[in-house]
Image (cartoon, rainbow, N blue to C red):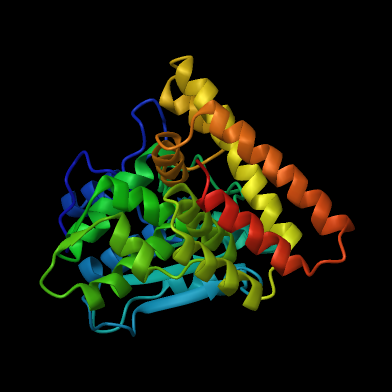
Length: 344
């Protein structure tokens, strides 16, 4: 069984009354798990990890006979209860898992409630609630609840911990960059880190540059590359990224709109930072992730208020030309990008 530190990055804040992944692992290690377990929370990766750890601990890695899985949209409450009540085969314990428990019909609940009042001592019954649904079964003396949610501010640390388990050092800036590309879901983060580990070889450190070069990004992220090239006055890369976006079918007005939004965001971020606004409040006000704010902070070093005013004026002129001019739209946008890269 994997060892997890008592105060790891998966633990929810102490102000929360909900037990999380660490509390589950501690109860499992001490043999104090309840016979009926309710799993909730948005991080399916932690839910699957908890089920895997429970299986390995109670049944053994190779025992699949005594692992029975049901699905809420098609399960019978009586069948689940009967299965949980029978003795395990060639084992001391049995593990019964109900996925999407929130989809179980109300008429199927009475047999389960009866079972929960007097559960089998040789069975762990796990009820997994997803889609943000609140479990209807609770308050029972034989039931424990675990919420597998990572606080938004802790996802960076969680990504760094996942990299550590794979034998790599993910820098904080690298973690923020990764999250800005794939989001806060630990499954996506873990999958990307596994892919990265295949290419890294002996170099165990992963920073923003490695993330940028190896992580698959969507077109919105590619616009960030375009803006980064503009900020560096890198005409060659700016032209390359713009050509890739156009080849992918991205409309010039759509590209222009995102560039426009980006520089408006820069202006607002600059104002907030100048007012010495706390970082957490800036993230909330701008509605950006820590990874996105990392790039904003880097760009803020390269643009003054006057720079942004001049660029916004150029963007406005380009918008008019794209809507009114008979000149090919890709030519208008290319000309704008090259002018921005050549700015004084």
